[in-house]
Image (cartoon, rainbow, N blue to C red; front, top):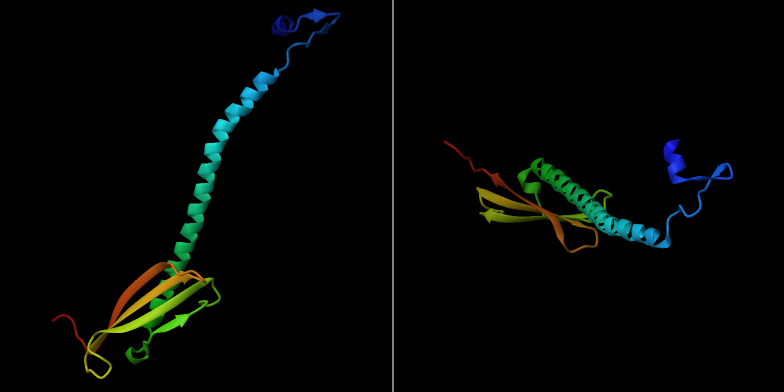
Length: 143
């Protein structure tokens, strides 16, 4: 109570609050200080959101490429051929499977195919993910 009487001396039985508000200069300075803090913070948040979206795109692309590689591993050697899937299983991504002979050819008894799976966003030329594997026919590794 003593603090109130020092801050707001009584006049006529009531405390006098006149002249105790914020001035226009103080309010402007507060807005400037808050702006100086808020602008870099908002830029940081927007960059974070952008990186989250890019990470989501990359994760989806990697999973689609892995799925296509699993399909390739379950195919017989003769059925592994090039193909393009746009859009891939109802997603917003295009998947391209490119098959080339790394060793031998179709008529050879022993041969090896190189399979490259590329994943892009639909309508975009930039490849998000590219996976490579090799599949062999009648080649035994080891001892």
